[in-house]
Image 1 (cartoon, rainbow, N blue to C red):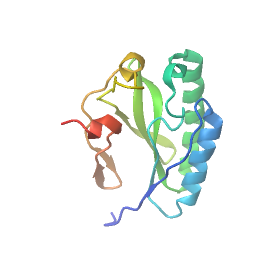
Image 2: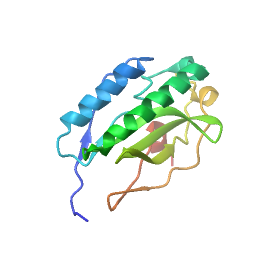
Image 3: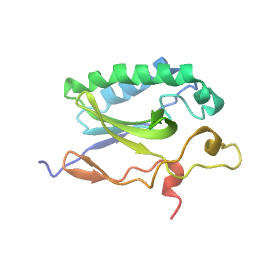
Image 4: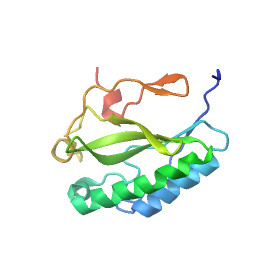
Length: 154
């Protein structure tokens, strides 16, 4: 175990609905992260933000999941792990999640708990809430992964 954990924050500009293009941005960020242990990307980065009603289309959900599952084996190359945001079906419900992908596998799925429903946000209609997030284990560290509003609420 190392006493060092290098995290690269990748702020990319995803396009709503461009799953393949957004995954290319993620690949590029991972490549550019060099010897980082973990690359952290934004909320719903695979779908583009804000995806609004597009995520309600089952065909879009299925295509996104297949694309992410095809990307997962790429992380078995010894490079950085990836923490990315995506709409994801969990226990039969569509969720706003963060996926920890490492070593060719999805190692953790964190569900967004506090779904906003004000201004331009309508997540309570689109996503099912998850339980309060708990820390996840990553290379000997415990990471608190919070998605947007989850950081703002007690």
